[in-house]
Image (cartoon, rainbow, N blue to C red; front, side, top):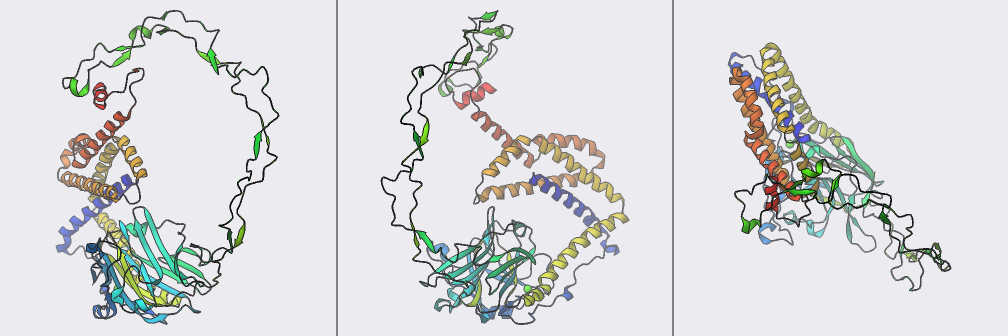
Length: 598
Ligand SMILES: [Ca+2]
């Protein structure tokens, strides 16, 4: 259903946008259209105002080259030819609606490992100040499958040379969006050091209640902010809206602190432990008159054969009008038999064939006798191993005190390219992060909102000056509506099938999603093509309407592909149908059944 509405909305928006734009282009020479929403001079590269550990607005290419290090590492444990971190990064403006002079770090390549990192201006120690991490992600091509999270690289002997940055490089925090198929994630993972044995374990934050799907498809910049406080509380915001908050001690899997007691692994259930709560009463005896052999149902002794019952006529007979199809191949298909039809002689008769009385429940039926259940005098209850003190127990009351952070980096793999990162800030002061966002992300959002508003205003104003345009809108919007109504109503069955198919999809089944998108785009192009023709031939409107009806069955490429899919679905359905009722034949080959339907 959503697909229909989306297609419809796209059509309406496309038509509404196209019409005035083409007109505007003609009138531009007369100086009638002079709307300009961009004001690049409003933007100056943001600088944090206050204490911070790292800030990067990517607007200065020379500074970027100096501060950022491309990974030269190889990913471990995979084939040599794809192990290299050879993803391509560029500093460039966003493809659409950027602020003048505002550049970002763009992951240009897809299906490649890509890693890049930068040393913090000042190492962050988890002492008595909160950690605030904030950055922007703009998925310019949306996202099919891939991450756009960052890693806060831990101080460690292995992290001194950032050219070695790879997937196993120790980090303290991983934060940001990630998606594959229908699995939309906003990661917050921290690596916790076991105070007893010094090993590290990843702790994964539980999911936000809200599903965060929009940022993966709306191709708009989004601001991700993580604040972790020394009291172990944390807060995650997207575009300044809190989507998750909680405690490092309560909202992570596995839990930071192991249980104080565990089941004793050496305690085994004794062989004679009786867990049977109830047993058949050993004193009960089968009553003497209990007949276990009486059947559950018997023929109704009071029933009589109805008048006019035709004992010698069969219920079904071979269709005398059926003919063997020309393409029937006895060798391939077996001997041809005419399909069975209800015997016309039986239509007016009370019934045909051998009469037998209907079955009724046997009042004498008792079934197998069983002794009633009574409580088991030896029942010992459910066995449980005894509890012992957990030898691995520890209690870390301050998981906030993670390993200090000395660098930040992106270590990614993505099926969608053109991921733009911007305005990365690490500070211990939430107000510095808020002010930094006000000078960067908030400006972008404001501009995008103004652009959207001004476009609508522009269309309305122009249309009011040229009221005849409304007639075009009505024709242009009305016709696709009619086409869509015919097109979709006519294929409701295949739509149902598609719905079921979608429900069966696994998260990783991306090929189908891509195909759906391509089909939608084809539909849109075809319909727009028709609209273009339509504008030129107002006179032939009604005729076109009729043609439209025809086309919705067999015409456009998209529609015919839909039809062929429907046919295939129908064929599949037929092949799964049980044999015709009453035929009572041995199973036939699919081809035989298909021919019978014909
Ligand atoms: Ca920037």
